[in-house]
Image (cartoon, rainbow, N blue to C red):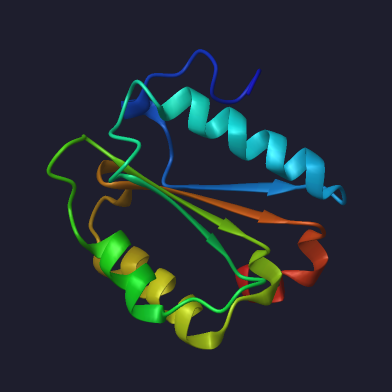
Length: 124
């Protein structure tokens, strides 16, 4: 991820990033780059999750992932694909996390992806 993750330490990463591309393959490539960057910095088996909103996901899965601290790494990463399709329940979970956490940069990095930011009304 030249220019945005390449020279950063994991401690410097913000809590939220948005990746936009009309091409599904470009989004998938960016996700591979994110995973590659994180693989030796956090536990890839327990602390990286991809939630694709094209498929139905249980709101409790997202809630538990972002609200449970990692026992293996200093941060966790949630990649939310197709964020323009987010349900009100999932949006509430994410917004509540940011409202209730004094410093969200400490525990989690959320990457949102969408083919068009204009369609991701709820995040705007």
